[in-house]
Each structure stands twice: as C-alpha cells, then as structure tokens.
Image (cartoon, rainbow, N blue to C red):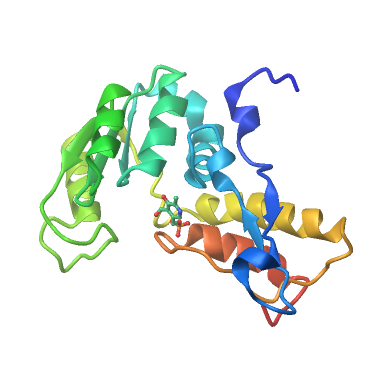
Amino acid sequence: MRYDHITELIGNTPLLRLDPAVHGLTHVELYAKLEFYNPFGSVKDRVAWGMIRDDLDDIIAGKQTLIEASSGNTAKALRVLAALHGIGLRAVTNRIKVAEVRELLQLLGTDIEELPGLSECPDPTAPNDVYTVIESTMARAPGAWYHPSQYTSEKNIEAHHHGTGREIHEDLARDGITRVDYLIGGLGTTGSTRGTATFLRKHNPEL
Ligand SMILES: Cc1ncc(COP(=O)(O)O)c(C=O)c1O
C-alpha cells in the first residue's frame, strides 16, 4: 500500500481476535486493538496529531514551541510530528520510569524537563505539579509556547471517538457484531477510553 505522508499511517490499526485457546474464556469473543501499529508506536499518535493538526499554521506563524505533560508516548509522537514543521517540543514530566524512553526522546531532540514527584496527572496541591510548571513557564514568556494539553483537550477524546471507537465498531460490524459489552483499557488522561466508549455506547448504552 502506498502512502504520501506518515500521518496517513496514524489510526486504522488492526483488531485482532484472540484465540479462546489463549484467553480461556467461554462464550466470550475477545479482541485486541493493536495500537502499537501506529507509526510512533502507541495509541498516543492519534492524540498528538489530533491536537496540533488544525493549529500548525498558527504555531509556525507565531514561532511557538510545544510544551506538553508527557512521560513518553505523547511526547514521542508530538516531537516528530512537530519537527516535520520545524516546531520544537518541551516535555514536562516526573514519571519517565524507563531509561530507554528518555534516551529515545533525547535522541529525537526533545527538550525534557524532569521534575521530582510521583504523579504526572495534574494535581494543583502537589509540589512540582506538571501543569503548574507548564503554566508558570508559559506566563514567563507570553505567546512563546503552545500547550496542546492532553489532560484537558477535547481533541484527545475526539481522536478516539471518531478514530478508535468508530474503527472498532466498523470492524466488528463487518462480522455482524454490533454490540460491545466491555471495553478494557489503561488510564492516563482517560482520553482513549472515554472517546472509544462514547462511540461504542451509541450502539450499546450498557457497555
Ligand atoms: C501505550 C499507552 N496506552 C494507554 C495510555 C493511557 O491512555 P489515555 O491517556 O488515553 O488514558 C498511555 C498513556 O498514558 C499510553 O502511553
């Protein structure tokens, strides 16, 4: 298959039916949405692209740099997608647990601001809260930064509503399955589970 741009490879990931001999559940059809097929390796590619796509011209015109709270996957995708347009990225985080993730971000040229602390999720009561640090950084240089803000952006949820959720529904519907009973996902910002679930709930409110 031929593509003209790497962003065309984001989404439309495979939905793999897991063999019951492997999962051992009876009367259950279990599928895995293989988000690691996204070009930068995770579900976060959808969000990164969804949050900057429409604003690229303004970010370039304003000579802005992206600033985002991310421990790895969002930053990885944002860094490359922005760099394609000459835009830089500062990733603010206190949660990089795997040295290789830090090294990869550095290799890609990410400006990483690592904070002490336990939780990356925004918590205004915590010292070194990532969002407080981002806000004070932006306040010191008005207009210099663009904050996609994956924890608050509706575009995060939309990327999964129109993308992940719709894809799961359409792939299953082709096989005559129109109802999903359970969606199991990991929680960070909750964008992937909320966006996917709101689409699937249109077809089964009890999901
Ligand atoms: C691979 C992967 N899956 C899931 C999540 C969580 O997704 P969300 O932020 O949509 O809740 C993250 C990020 O936290 C992630 O990197």
